Length: 203
Image 1 (cartoon, rainbow, N blue to C red):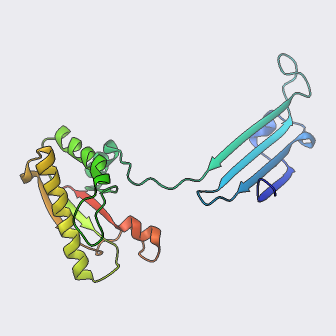
Image 2: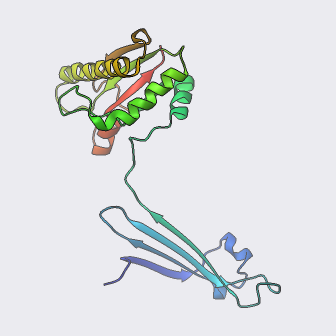
Image 3: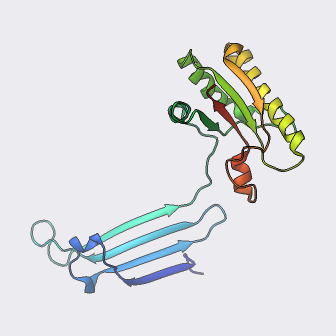
């Protein structure tokens, strides 16, 4: 059974590598792909006789350039608060992922706490910042129900920040818009995942 399920081996294309491999007859380029359930792996190899003669690189010395790329699942729970603040200032809002709720519930899951802690830190470092906390859903289910659920979830986040991090409640207002303001298409699971979010909106 081969290690890689797709392998291509051919003469090297016209690339910047010719600066170190002027003799194209000796140059070869290999690309390969390994399919895995946890994410595909790609490898690219460029092999040639080195073009710099003399010194530490005698004529005929092989040169090998290797690039390996591994696919991984996008980690949406990780947020950069500097980037969030830049979005708030330049766009008037920032999408936040990593706040999770029980199904059909406004109860915040424990795994959401690292993200909420960063939001609290942002608010404490910017004491004059006031925000609308807006809940969003995908389009699965009844639209009126989703609007109500998204509003309850936004309220839960505001209450959590107020009760656990001593954030002044006058700085935060909660709203829910359900699926009325999608960020991506609701036709795919990836799109629906992007639409299930909380946005911090500057009034």
